[in-house]
Amino acid sequence: MLTRTFLRPTHPGFHSGTQARDTTRPQARGNRRRMRHPRRKRRGSLIGGMLYLLVITVVIIGLYGLYNGMMNMLRSNQLQSQLTRAVAIIERYHSYTGIYANESLLGFLDGEGFTDQEFAETAAGGFNFRSPYGTDITIQGDERNFIVTVNDLPDSACKKAALAFQSSGSGLDGLVIENTPVVLPMTEIAVNGACNNGTNDVALTF
Image (tube, rainbow, N blue to C red; front, side, top):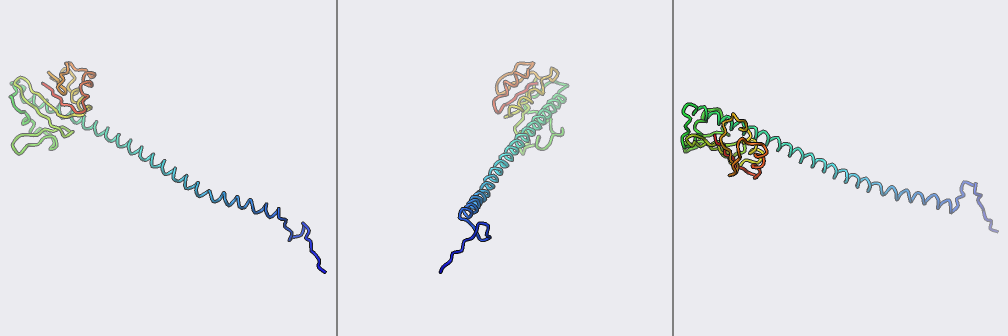
């Protein structure tokens, strides 16, 4: 005769089907949740890396612009000093006669302390006088006057070159910017309006 053994719910070996399902389902859901976490971390790391690169790019562009601005300011200041020195030297050599030969007067700048980048003798025996922007500067006599011409200056340097002789005691008799005469005494507004061609030829008559 067969006998059946029934386990009470309080018996250690008793597990109902409902209990088994209740204990396994949450584990499966927990496993699924844990599988998503690495994807979220990777997505977060990618976004963080992109933001970091964006910030670095903006900083580099800003520094590059700042560097260019500072270099342009230094060059324009150097140009202003270079021109005022050259004009003073030419006037000093001609102070007695007041007559300026109808020829290039660059030879009077020889030995006056300009750097090799600014002033150099050519193989033909002439002289080259160059601005900090690498453009030519000529000084031409015209009997009672002499004309200093600076070629191909950017707008900011054009303004600096002209305004260097804004004061009434500078000896400036005429100013032409890119074939446009500027009425003297010059104003900053007039110079700003004339120096807006991208590159400008500036002719100063003394």
